[in-house]
Every structure is written in C-alpha cells, then in structure tokens.
Image (cartoon, rainbow, N blue to C red; front, side, top):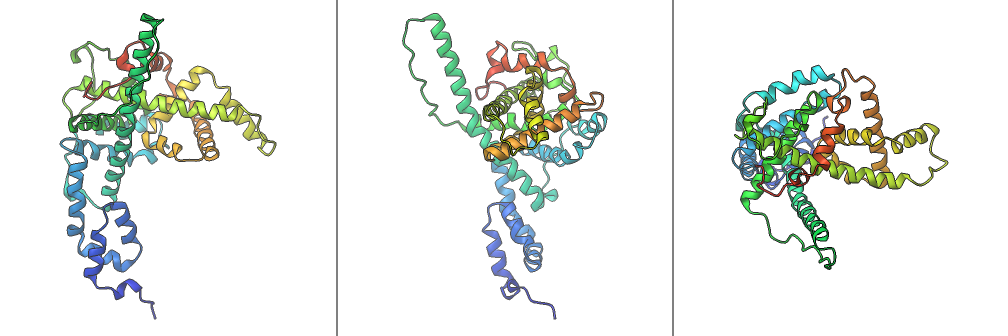
Length: 354
C-alpha cells in the first residue's frame, strides 16, 4: 500500500495560504517541489499564487528595464551551451538576440523558474548598485586629492568624506539600466570586441557604427554605460587576483601535488598582458561569478580561480575558435579603458551615461 504524504492530511486552502507567504519564487519553488501533493495544490492555484510575485517584478524593474531583464535571463540560459561552442557557433546563438528588437515582457511566459531567474538578477543588480556608488565616490575623491597635491603640495590632506546621500529613484533606475546593458552585452565578448573599443568622450553617435539593438534609445550612451560597468567589475576582479597573488607568494606546502605546484607557478608568473586578458575573460562570465568567488573562503577561492585560469589557458591554445575575449589582442584596448587618462573611463557617477 502506498504511503500517504503527511501534507495530504492538510487542507488545500492551508497549503495555498502557506505558499502565498513566500516572497521569493525560489523559496516557493523549493516548497512546491518537496512534495507531489504541494505541487498539485500549487498548479491548481498557480495564477493566484504568482500574481504578487509578478506585481513585484514591475516594482523591481521599472519601465523598460523589465524587458531588458527578460533579455538578460534569456541569454543567461544559453551560457552552459556557450561553454561548448566555438566562436562561430556562439555568435549564431547570441547575435540574433542582440541585433533584433527585444521581446516585450509577457506574463504568459512566466513560471516559477523564470521568476526565480528574474528575482536572482534583481538581487545581483541591487548588490551592484549598493557597492558601485561608494567605489565611484572614493575613486573621484582620491582623484581630487591627487590633483590637489599636485597643485598645492604644501597643503595638508583632508580625510575623504563618506558617501552619505542616498541615491534618488532616477539614479537607481539609471544604474540598473547600465547593469542590465552590461549583463546582456557581455555575451558579445565570445565573438566580438566591439564593446572594448574607445568610444570617445565628446563624440556623437554618428561617429560610430554600433550594430547592436538596444531597448534604450541612445546607442552611444549604452556602449559607454557598458564600458563604465566593465571598468568597475574588471577592477573588482583585478583586486581579487592581487589578493590571491599575495596568498600564493608564500612557499607552497609539501602536501600540494607536483602538477598543482606547476599550475600555481604558471599562474603567478603570468605576464602583465596575459594578466589583463585573463581578467577580461573573468569579466565575460558576469558579476554573479564575481560574487560567487567573493563568497568563498581563501582556499576554495584560490582553487576556483586556478581552475578558471587553466580553462583560459586551454581555450587560448586554439586562437582560431576560442572566445574573442581570450584570443584577440586586447592589450591596448584594456589599458585605454581601465588605465586611460580620461576620467569617464575610470568611474561613472550615476546618470553620466544613461
């Protein structure tokens, strides 16, 4: 005789009320998949249970940002396939999505899985928007301090005031736009380096051919917003790699296998150009990858970075088919973007590009 689930002893109304309490689609999904009876109750009341989560989406991604967020999630679903594609195959998957008009958001396409992806993207965007203004403020203040020292070398340096003013709703929306543009168009780095070219500062859109379709009107602003986010995340990855370099500067333990020591030495002795290119390769994997690295302890972090570096070396072995971000000569582009003298390459204050 088949065993009866303890949940089946509960009335469907109580299960429905319990599920309606969840504010996260991922948590709701975990509960729904825990028991066939709960799943059956959910399917019977799916429209009712998903409505609050759908309403929240319009708040989380205001205006056109929701349509852009759906495009980002659509591209993210391709990432596992892209790892096993050569450059031409990756372009065939990604380019049609980014050169056609974005598909409008449709409630009919939403299920718990799709909602979970959008909510996860929103959490990442929130993390980015909490961290970016502080870093941009510190960088701008440090720049002012350096300029003041050059102009007035005998004056004492004052401490940098903290960023205390909260961002306005408009600034938050603009920063979210920039983040979503970045997360969609980072996928082009598999087969194109157009987003890493110098798009100038005072030039007009007519001065550049930008093949991509943006839901937001000004293509040049979108390209510059991408680059501003690129510089920020690139430098975050760079700081992470520097910490790992310091950790690895000590002699390796005898317990580490010979092949592990060789990989360690190869990583530590990478030349500056290779270091830049590897950092750009990490960037192409997205901000969520950076957050996952940052959540690890030192040992797990080092192992994950070493694994990524080994994968980078494997890809680089065939420059004809490997991702462009790995095989192209990006030394000049990366140095111009990340270390150029134009301040708009160095940091982005909210609203500057979007």
